[in-house]
Image 1 (tube, rainbow, N blue to C red):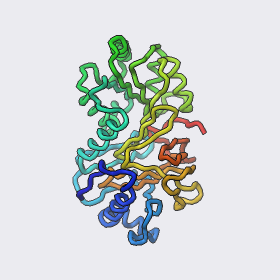
Image 2: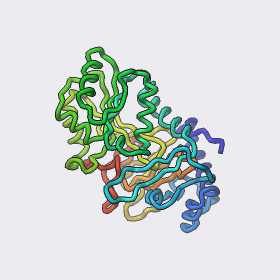
Image 3: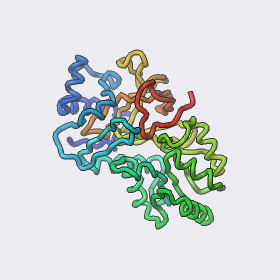
Image 4: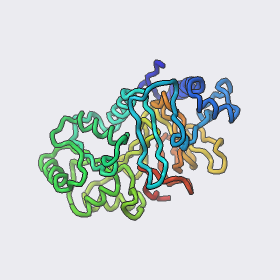
Length: 327
């Protein structure tokens, strides 16, 4: 399909989403069967909140593919001990690369501006992590000799942060939450040239904390005014970012709606404030499914910003979502 999601804007988002819906209805057997069970056909869908959203659990039980292809990448969720992990079969690595690079540039500018440090031990210890793939490519694009991953080498990470601050080098430290907390409990700084970005996730390593408490502890240890956050998941090829207070915004080709907790087919209209369970449209998911029912509860602001407030009761805790939210 000849479709460039990076050209999407607010003015053409709905038309593009409906185009992708028609394409996936015709070329994704599972999604077609799901829509048919709901008795929903493309000719009767005129608004994006009328599009059927596929429950995210199907990524655990089925290969979600639009058209037939051999995947260039297969991303797998981390999950928890004993859980079944989701898998995302990616037709083209270039699609994912284009999505995360363009999104990063939109929110943070050229990666070459930064020394990029990845503190993602649990993700590095296993394979097939979309987060590690993204950060690894950002590290390469930064071109900085000090950029890199740090598994358990807190001493080297500390020394690089101190050196970068001394030399006033712009730095991005992106880490899983429990590892950032472990690191900053052992090391105190006054960081003026460093962005700290948490990806969520206690991974069963520490007591669950609210995002506000996590950010409070990191601020006390570093002196930063705000802690940034990344919101993504295995089933999506796009990320949303927050520059503080857990308020996220995605790229133009990604939109978050909410569905009612007692009615999965009662979906909020775009551009309206609402609370419920997050439904995500990710138009980078051209060859999987662009319309996903997640298990995250959310608050949507009228300007498109959103806040993740928790998880649906009795659903599996997932890799990047293992953080108690402030409700």
